[in-house]
Length: 582
Image 1 (cartoon, rainbow, N blue to C red):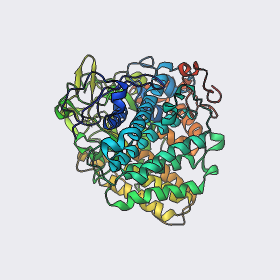
Image 2 (cartoon, one colour; image 1 turned 90 degrees about the horizontal axis):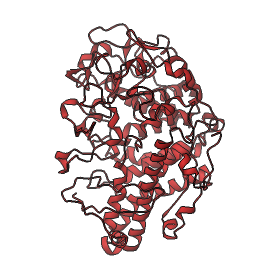
Image 3 (tube, rainbow, N blue to C red; image 1 turned 180 degrees about the horizontal axis):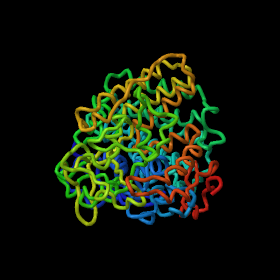
Image 4 (cartoon, rainbow, N blue to C red; image 1 turned 180 degrees about the vertical axis):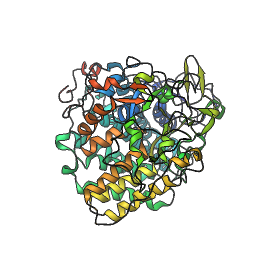
């Protein structure tokens, strides 16, 4: 698909520059158009709504890696010390306030509401001009796409802030968007999001010709994620977790994912490493992903690059690797396996500072997914033996953040850089919003809470079977360090044992993919897990290098830190009520 793109100026919760397109360009964008002309071109309005998915920056990444990873036990901030960016408050929690990190919180709020604004205006354009310009059937599909996008932006807003103003296209038409408060309750808000995904599921086609457009499976998956989220409560620990499970919502998780599982269109990739390779974009495991490209693909100067992850290149490997999003020692330890190939659930932290060394296998074995997720000193960077990682040379600030690096969101070094000037480099990696393995894990979680252990175990073991096979293609150099086995199945296992397996598998499979904190919150385990993590992680060392001592100041406060404070800049409008205890 080759789009003609308009630069559209619209009033939003905040104003952001209108961007380009989610697909490849072969024309020069126009300088600007009048509001009337923009509204009368519904196809361009839909394109602008899609473009908001990629109009992010490291200060406001729409994939939410600071909020899902740095805020959890998966990752340390990284970079050149604790004052490098405003994200230190995100990972330590104790200094978090409406003004700390005020700029970044506000930028994320603005970026997400800019996406909402584009969706609302696209819906008005489609309502007024869709049938005339596109035909009734095409207009109906485009409306469903835009409602999917609006649901996605709102889901992320609620994930971060809990209490947000709900602005729809009728508020825009009626010019009341600037007076909407955030007093709508959590379940009502989520209900609005669910309505968008239900509409999208019922009106989107099974497949789309254009990569990156939402289809029925994407809507069904996001619907399942909504139901899974609200099935455990409102997110605050006193009213969230296993004691608050809503079985009816979990049944809807199964109903929503039945279509995906039975469609035959999606499956696990054969090798775990294939999912996170640049040439593996839009494979059979990708249900929905934000599309990115480089300049050789789309004939632009810089490409449609992934600027949200721009900081996360490895120091000393990439021209300007900033060394952010550093895997934690706790995460590395979670990949340990026992003699029987099963995770070390209860004692994985007993020997805290443990790590594999290339060519020096020990009795400690590891889940193969470790070597696809974490860049480890002495091992190749992203499988390429011409780029070996060094503890001394490939960490910007090892005495603060250690010596590990993140692998999933970056391409292989030999693939080159999308941009490598003006103190930046960035990548053409897609951002997964939903992949098939996550859908399997959601189903397994629902089966466990509904008392069907065998079906849950079947899902979990399929994922472990794939991990078991993910050695010889990409990481043969680690073969003597890996050992993983399937779980013994059977209904005799307690629900608590099954939950433990599900939680562990979810962490290992989706580590560093911006989901960990939100999973802990849903399970009601955030404060217990994170405060224990802070106590242990501050004593980390790699070789002779001690690091992570700053976690001595970290504290997660339940009843407060489950959500982030509404930015001070937004509170100045006088329209909003602040989240509790901020």
